[in-house]
Length: 354
Image (cartoon, rainbow, N blue to C red):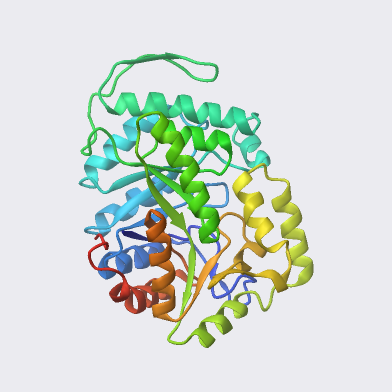
């Protein structure tokens, strides 16, 4: 079991309305979170990608020399960078970090953002690019001389002269709920990620992807992306969960749900269906709260409760086959400390990986 934390390169603060003041994603603040996560024994940190975020490669490169054991799960987007350039960047940072690099491929869900980056492809075409990109990226990092003539990408005699430290390449993480995404996972990835859906939905998704990978002679690991609101008592945890959205107006919720509806992500559609944009439908499974998804896209659910209850829910997901857990909380610095101090000792020691 690998426990990650999240580096908030956009949007951190005391609540989701910014009433307590937003925290700038400064290098000093990112350093505080990364060093605290390193000290506490987190396996790694996820660094997101997107037009609202600071660049994930630059953030990771800035923080690697400031930490000792912490791994960096960098989110990158195929289609807006050359796969061979990405391979060189991967190999360099993997060597310079002494093998602490992990890569999260994000195909992207926002057509407007894609257009701003010069990508004018529909949902399935973007996954076709991801497929070609991963083929070139992986084979280049393996040391092959790669020639590829595809529908979207074309390289001739691509070669990497300075290989990565991790062989054959740093582990590949990837998420997506559509059939196109599941096919990519079955063909290419090491760890398939899901957002925090109820356990029965996660179990079905794992079954589908595991079967697809098995038909190709591959075995995958599985991970989940969740927020966490853990307190000494369940009553306090639920009070603090509700406080996160207490200052968010109904008009804001409606506007954000309308904005999310234009995204072509199946995973985002599944997140929205959990709550339907309603405050009275946020308890979507025992101790699984969907309030964050009212105003934030992507991962929209949180585990809420006292330490033992949250640990029990983590073990419930682990029993389904999840072994990578990527958590976050508002504000991220204080919540990283709270979560580690309250929950780590309650997790099965034989499963916890540092």
